[in-house]
Amino acid sequence: MSGDLDPIDPETAVQMYLDSRRRELTDATIQAHQYRLKQFVRWYDDDGLNNLNNLSGRNLHRFRIKRREDDELANFTMKGQLATLRMFLRFCATIGEKFEQDDC
Image (cartoon, rainbow, N blue to C red; front, top):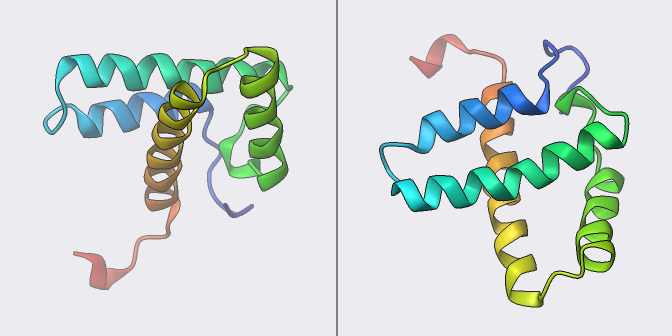
């Protein structure tokens, strides 16, 4: 993500993501995404980070290691965690792009 973007904190980005998905996902799925992403937000805050524009591959690697080893997640649970995080990060990439006149 780029340094010339307006800063966005993880909590705001997660809320935007969940709001964008409400019409296409069931309430139970939204709750599951919210729970999984809460784990990421908590870790991100605990790591002293507060702007998703600064997220790096190294950050994601540390999060995966923490969830797998410290939280002792089963492989199936870890797959769900990472799948949700991947969808969230794709969403973040789309809201972070500069608006182009051809986009409308």
